[in-house]
Amino acid sequence: MKRRTFVASLLGMVAAACGGQSAPAPTAAATSAAAPTAGSPSATVSLVTRSPAVTGTPSPSPASCAKDSSGHVLFVDTHAHLSALTRSGPNYDGAADVSIEKDDASSARLEIVMPPPFPASNYVGAYDYTSYQAAVTKRATRIAFLGGGGTLNPMIQEAIKAGGVSADLQQRFQTTASQIIAAGALGFGEMTAEHLSFNPNHPYVTAPPDHPLFLLLADLAASANVPIDLHMVPILRDQPMFPQFAQLSPNNPKTLNENVSRFDRLLAHNPAARIVWAHAGDTFTGCSDPAVAQRLLAAHPNLYLQLKADTSSRAQTLVSQGGAIDPRWLAVIRAFPDRVVLGGDNFWEAPGALVPFQMVQNNLSTFRAFVDQLAGDVACRVAADNAIRIYRLG
Image (cartoon, rainbow, N blue to C red; front, side, top):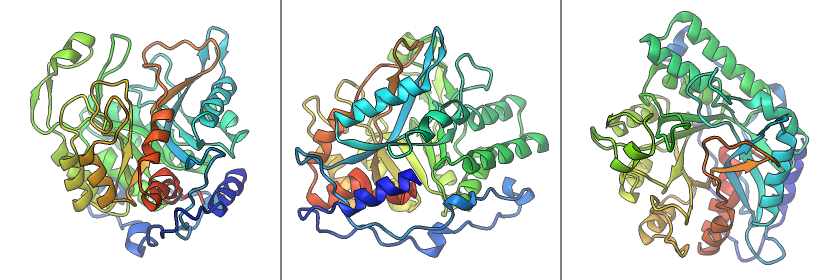
C-alpha cells in the first residue's frame, strides 16, 4: 500500500517538458496467461496466482517525469542486491538504509532488490526473499523485491544435475513460485541461463534457456502477470571460454555453448510471459551488441531490455568511458522506447558487510547522466514509466 501511494505521487508530478503519451495498454493476449500446451510442464500443475492484495492489471500510466530539485528525471532502478552478511550476522536493515542513501544521491526514487542467481540452495551465503522481506516491507515506499534466485534457480540446477525434472521437483518448483508471489514479490529473479565466474569464490552457473523449468516459469509468470528477471550472457556460437575469464576463475568451463537460439524458444513459448533481459549493454562476450538486441526485440514483444550503464567496466558497449550513450544503442532505445528499463546491478553493503565475490560498484550516477541525454518523452518512459508498467508498480 505504501508503494502504491509513492507511485501515485510519482505519477502526479508531471513535468511540462515530458508531454508525450506512454505506451498503449497491453492487449488481452499480452496480459493474460496462455493455456498450457500438451507436454508443457505446467499442463500437470495449477498455475500460480497473485495474492488478492495485488491482483488486477493496471491502466497505462501517463508520462511521469517527476524531477528532483536539480531538474533530473527521477528513475526506477529495477535491479539491485543487498549485501547484508556481517561477522555479527545478517543486517538487511543496514543494507537497505545504505541503498536508500545512495538512491537519494542519484535521483533514484524506487528500486527493486533481488538475490543473485545461486547455483544451489546450500551454497555458502545463499539467500532469497525471506531473508530481506521484513527490511524491504518497512521501506515499501522506496524498495520492492523479486524472489527466486536462491530457491528457483537452484532447483533448475538440481534438475540439470539429475538429468531430468521429477514430479516432486516440478511440484516444489511450482509451490515455491506461488509462495514468492504470495509474499508480495513483483516477479521472479534473479534467474540465470549463463552467468560467468569472476573469481574463485564466485560461482559459474549455466542452464539452457529453454529448459523445462524455465518454460514452466514462463507459464507461471504469465499466469501471475509478473516479469522474470533473467541474467543471460549471450553466446552466438559454441566457442572456447574467453581467455580473460579462464584466467579470472577456475570455475569457468573450457567451452561455452550457443544459447541465443534457445533463448528465442523460451521467449516464443508463452508470449504472455514478460521476460526482462538483465544487464543489456554490459557484455563480456562481444555478443551483446545492439543488432542482437534489436532482432530479439522485433521478434518477441514480450522481451524487455534492462540496461546496465557501467563506465568502470571495459566490457560494456552502452556508454563510453565519459558516459555518452553509444549511437547504436540509442537507435535501439528510440525504436523500442516502451521496452527498456534501467538496472544498476549494484550490491549495497550493510556496514561491515563481508563481500566474498561481488564487485563493489555504484552505477546510479551514470544512470542519471544517461537519462539526461534522452529526449523528453523517451526519458520519461525509460526512467520510470516502463518499470511502473512492466512490474505493475501502479
